[in-house]
Length: 534
Image (cartoon, rainbow, N blue to C red; front, side):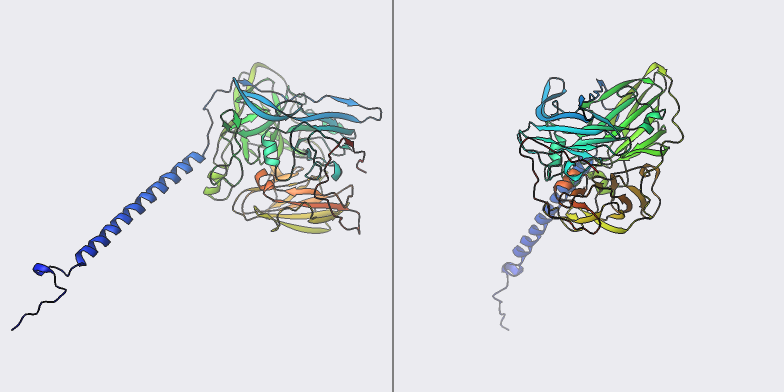
């Protein structure tokens, strides 16, 4: 029998040529690819773990609070023959020594950083001469103020470098803690972060009669809170990875003071809290969970004080709280972690997990006695929504409100002077937002179909709207009418605003329609505006 040898047979009875070698190559490739995938997975996991851990900030107890709190000076003013109170503000660049021996480039009003506190009474005529000493155009918005649209200081009232803008109006609203800041379209975050901001306090006869702490800088303290991060001598402004709320700093300042303390000489101290950060939301309280009395929100006093342990403020919101001190004690105003940001991812990368020591209050060994906080404050002047003539819906998304990105030449909503409306605000965007309306103070009617918590029952112009939240707001538009000059509504997380999360509305007389706003009603030269609210 003849044995035929296959041409494919391997020598010495082995496997066919190429099979072991091919199998070996495939095995080696699989091993190499597996090792590579494992290495990449480990690296990605390590990177994520580092990002997750690094994203959380906690400054509690980490550093001594050894810098005396700066108190913004009350702005000087002159009263003209017709009774108009005139203030002067100049936007200017400078340098500020936040840290010993380190000069940081900053912007400010009438100084290198922040601005003086303006103060006026209800019924007064006011005029503010605003000079722009910067090398780029900006604007000054009177946040929370009821005034004509042409005086509002939004993105249509730009002030060119070297120019002066002089808005005037009559103060026609209750006592409140308001503030002023730039509002240039697409540049607001940068201008505010550099230091352009200040308080505007309003007084009235009703608040003056109440036995509340009211000595400015003594038992009535301005507390302008900002988060910052330093890049060498400069203020950083970059957003971290996955920080879609905007810029988040790793430490806080009050009134431009790092690690501030304030000596207290009274049993009761009134803190006028302003969240002047561009993106960060705070939950203010004290480590010993002491209760404090919330007496006012954005637009003024509540009907009655509300005792609470935490008050949450998103960018642009204000609150006035009264705290009781014991002789000789030291207590830290702190911002605590918050859980209403959406999921764990948003809490961690949106700042909701962070903790900050903000301001140390040091009580003297002997304290002046203070009268008790009154049980009743002022009657509400807010609309209740029952007389609303129509409703509107606003869907909040980073890509725009109601699916539309801001357009300076488009009027989004037209409201009738004197009308009350109900606006429904919804956030299903997966990230925190808030909602600010120019010119009006509104009532929060509902939060997710329920009555609002005590912190949202006062007059508001800005409100935090976390993911998964629907709110109903009652607003009354008392004018004056101006079909050609819009007010704004927008998210006050300023990165979101700059990205186009803003719309415009005009107030018109009954039966009239909106006009067409120019792209920019800029003020390139020296000019005065004499119009006042009707």
